[in-house]
Length: 372
Image 1: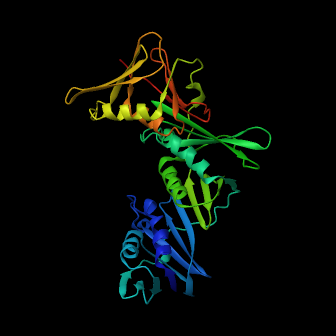
Image 2 (image 1 turned 120 degrees about the vertical axis):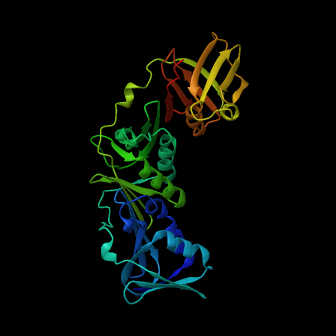
Image 3 (image 1 turned 45 degrees about the vertical axis):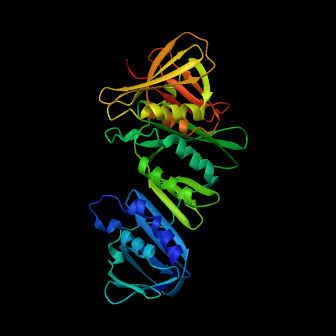
C-alpha cells in the first residue's frame, strides 16, 4: 500500500475519528483506524462496535492496500508536521513509513485482518434533512438525556416520525432523565421514511452525530436500518446502534392545564441564574424563585459557602408565589432557546413547569420543581 495525500485532509479525517477511538475498551484494536487505499481515494474507518464512521478522501493512490494503526498517534503526527503532501507507504511486515518534507516516521502498524469487519455501506433507505434542523433537534434535547446507566431506556434521545400536513412529516426528538423532559420538533417537506414506533439513539451516538454535523456543510441523509441510526454526508457515513428498550410515554408528562404564566427576557434571566449559581456546590444546586409585585427574586443558598440573590423586573401582579428548581436544569432549558422572550408556566404546587420560547411551539422543556 502506498499513497500521497494532502496533510490538512488527512488531519481532518483522523480528527473526526477521535471521539470513537479514544474510548475505554478491552479490545486495543478499537483504538486504531483502518485505512484502505483504493482507486483515487482512501477510506478511513473507525468503530467501537456501537458507533462506526466511514469517510472517503481524495488521494493519489500508488498501490492499493490497507493498514490499521493508532488513531491518536497518527493524529499527533499530522498535527505536528508542516503543511504539504504526506507520503504513506507500507513496507515489509507491518512497518509503516509516513513522511512529509524532511519529517519521517516509521511506526509499527497492525494487520488489517485484525480490525472488526464493518459494512461500509449503511444499506438504509435514507432521506434528505437540513443539517441545521437535525443539529437543532439534537442540541435542544441532548441536555435532558439521562447519564444513569441503570435506566438504559433513558440514556438516549427518542426519535420518531409523525405525519404532518399534506406533503410533509414531523421529526421529533425527546430527551428525559426523569426530572426534566425536552421535546423538539422539525418539519421535513417531501418524501421521508416511516417508523412504526420511535427509536432510541444513545447519548454517545448523539454526541458523535452532533460533532459531525458541526464540521460538515450541506444537507445530510438520514435513515434507520437493522437497529442502526444512519447519517450520511458528502463522502462520509456514520452509523449508531440503537438502544433496544421501550421509551416511556412522554406525552403523559406534558401538563394539560397551564400554570401561572410569566414572560421574561432570556438574557436577563440566564445572567441572573449564573450569578446566583456561583454560590452553588455539589449537593446544593437549587434556586428559590419568588414572584411578587412585578418582581422575580432568585435566591441560592449553600450552608458551606453562603448565599446569593438577584432580582429581575417582570410583568406580574398575581398572588405571591415561591418555588424551587435545580439551577442547572433551568439554565439548560433556557439557554437553547433562540427567541428573545421566554414563556415560563409555573405549575401549581409540586406539578411540573413548562419553559419555551415565545411564539415557538416546536420546543418545550418540562422541569420538575424541587421538593420543599
